[in-house]
View 1 (cartoon, rainbow, N blue to C red):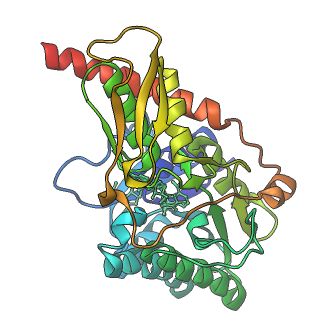
View 2 (view 1 turned 30 degrees about the vertical axis):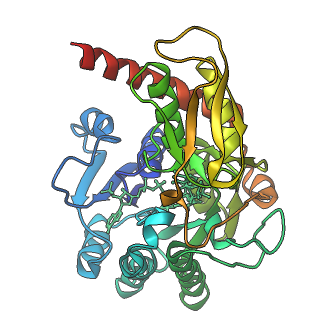
Amino acid sequence: MKSKIALITGITGQDGAYLAEFLLSKNYIVHGIKRRSSSFNTERIDHLFQERSEDSTFILHYGDMSDGMNITRLIRDVNPNEIYNLAAMSHVRVSFDTPEYTANIDAIGTLRILEAVRLLGMEKKVKVYQASTSELFGKVQETPQSETTPFYPRSPYGVAKMYAYWITKNYREAYGIFASNGILFNHESPMRGETFVTRKITRAVTRISVGLQNQLLIGNLNAKRDWGHAKDYVKSMWMMLQHDKADDFVIASGQNFSVRDFIIKSFKLVGIDVDFQGTGINETGVITKIKNQTDGLKVGQTLVKIDPVYFRPSEVDTLLGNSNKARTKLKWIPEYDFDSLIKEMVQSDLTLANKEKIIKEL
Ligand code: NAP
Ligand code: F7E
């Protein structure tokens, strides 16, 4: 059987890497768009490139979501069956610093893809997945959030993604393009970017446990998120494009936890019990018990402090998803839960921390 061809924007990101691996395992020919960078930005996919470059099933192209001609030419040349639009300025806090850029890439970038499909006359040939987000729900209007919950974005990122969501739906209705929105709640992994809160925590906790770092400086401890594993979530993207009709689906674990919970659980996994004391910006995380005595750590020591620099001008306080539609119609079932997600992230970062320590001591 002839292999299907997929084109992934954002191939160098967390989801791009997991999705590429998943589609290659399904015998797709995978083309990815990466942007030029002054240093290497392909760390997450280098292993795929090494394994697959000889049989030409994994091919990378230079491109940028701000460049409509480049996007149009690539879609024409690659002639994909499926496009996964994962490229984005994806950091909510940073979107307050770069709102215009965020709108250009996350909102208009999505339009560039859909317009290219239309202008090339590929409306009936190609299916499009749009990486929509639980950030659309922002200041939540009901709990849990489902496909019918009204949107109330709280950041330039959320607002840009709201345009992308609607333009995807509009091109579906206006031109009959098979274009689906995956409204994905937070999903993490050992490949998560290091400035997102989960990875920031697992890196800090593991580095503290081996004596490479003294403290974790953190923002809003009360924020609650519905966290899942990226590996489970990229599978749902593919399932959406195999469904009999284009539609919008919420993907979530159905459980939420606070940033504080995430920190306590992560420290526990390296044998350190941490308790939170005080309130507001004076709240601190203090050691109450240590399983295996680690160099330099002692009961009563402060390991976590608040730094208001990480607060956002407007915050999304709590998110909790209802993914019943995807579970029923797509038969999507996640394999990871909150505990197994954190365990995998902590184990992976502990390995990295130990390597870092050995190099430092050489
Ligand atoms: P990520 O790790 O930040 O990856 C983003 C990708 O977009 C990277 O490959 C990045 O390239 C690329 N990119 C950024 N600006 C670009 C531009 N101007 N032109 C071309 N490529 C550009 O994000 P992720 O966590 O994998 O998320 C994937 C998508 O899902 C994003 O659209 C995100 O907004 C959305 N989403 C994520 C979550 C989540 O919890 N992870 C939840 C819902 C939705 P570089 O590697 O060069 O930076
Ligand atoms: O923050 C709080 C922060 O940056 C989560 C993106 O993938 O998921 C992600 O967006 C929460 C927020 O993710 C720190 O204020 C506290 O309430 O890990 P995050 P996010 O903003 O939820 C959605 C679904 C996306 O679509 C996005 O692309 O944690 N928080 N202290 C902190 N956050 C960060 N980053 N750093 C802190 O020190």
